[in-house]
Each structure stands twice: as structure tokens, then as C-alpha cells.
Length: 275
Image 1 (cartoon, rainbow, N blue to C red):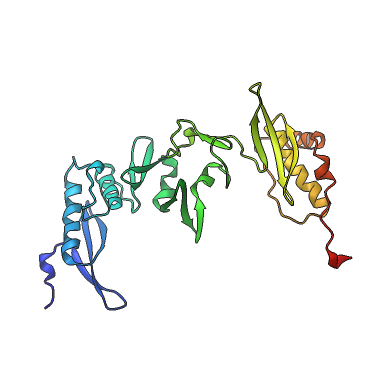
Image 2: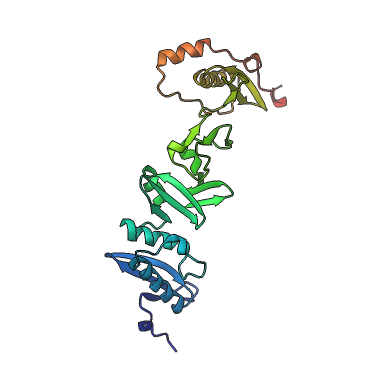
């Protein structure tokens, strides 16, 4: 006996490629057609439809009222309540606040971002592995930290910090990046001042030198790259780009900055086949 779909408003049956029947639920609100998902039976699809209408028509319905037995997944709750309150529908679980927005990975796991990032995260779904957050971008898994100048394998406390100690708050005003240049680490001295240690990886890490300014350190790394390339090292390194530094000043620092003799004297091992 067929199912009378007239009893299930907002529900439509569909057939998968393997012949299985499933049921889609959707609604229209403020002339916006919203898909609520796919369900195994018309009863659950219709329950999702009724729940969606309830959320949109109940001003007091809130995110903290969500329970696991809801016919809608939590992410859809977030999308619907944001549409109800802010007039913008996002497929991703985003709720807009004043001067920021919240991205809900779960009812208790929430990330904060500047509104400038809204367009990006509305079209890129965030995934989580431990405290590592990433998105799929052109088929690759891209860490969201890279958007904020945090290098791969950077360590919190050494290379960057969250100013308010909230590691879920990715607003730029809350991020302080210590080591923004390749090969450069900032080290606090006993007198409270900082030195910048530069390391470059050849066969193992080599110390290029220690410098009193970040610019000197970044340029020393670039100079080490040039020396190694001249000495026959074929490994490709990414040089540092120092924004806001005049070419004449860069050249002056480059000429004067010292590089470790171990780097200057390094030669790649000779292949036995070349002898």
C-alpha cells in the first residue's frame, strides 16, 4: 500500500539510485525555501517540518533549549534561529551577534569570529579534530589558523596567544602572533627583553643566529637561504616578506646582519655516483 503524502505537509518522497525510498522535508518562510534534510520515514520528516515552523514562529525559542531528541539536528536549529532573528539564512551553523558571529560545532562547542570572516565561513564548513580546526578548500584540508598568520605546527604560548585566554575566540583583536616569520622564534630573556633566534632546516636544524629585532631575524633567514642556494643546496625554502620596510633599509640590514659560520660553510654531501 502506498503512503498518502497528503497527511504529511512539507514532506516529499524521493528514490535513491539503489531504489530505496527516503523522505525530504522543507518549508518556506519569508519567501525563503529551506531544506530541513532527509529522513528514513515520512513521520520523522513531518516532525522536522513541524519543529522548523515552531522555531521560526516562536520568538522565545532559544539555542539552549535544544535536546538530543529533537527531530532536527542542532546545526539546523542554529540556521533557523539565525534566520528568524537576523533575517539571513546560512546553511552552516552560524548565529550572528553584535560585531561578531558564532559558529556552533555543537551546543557546547562554539567558535567566535569577526564579521569580516562571515562570507568565508558561510561557505566553508568547519571540522574539528581535537583543538585543530580546518575546512575543505579546493579538495584540501586547510587549517583555519592559517587565515590569522599562525604557521603550521605553531605552538600556543610560544608562537601566538589568545589574549583573553579563550582558544575558541578567533577574532583578530584576540590573537597576538609572536613569530610571524619563517624560521624565527621569539625568546624572552631573564631581563624581560626579547631575542629572536633563527633556525633553518637543512639536514637537521641549524642555528643561523640570534638577533635583537624581528626584522633582522627575518632578513637573516633570507640571507641564509641565499647562502645555502649559492653553496649548492637545492631544497626550496620560503623567504620572509617584510611588509613596510623600504628596499634601501632591507638592503642595509641584509648587508650587515651576521650568519652563523656553520651555515656559511655548509656544503651538501657529495653523492657517491658523482665521484
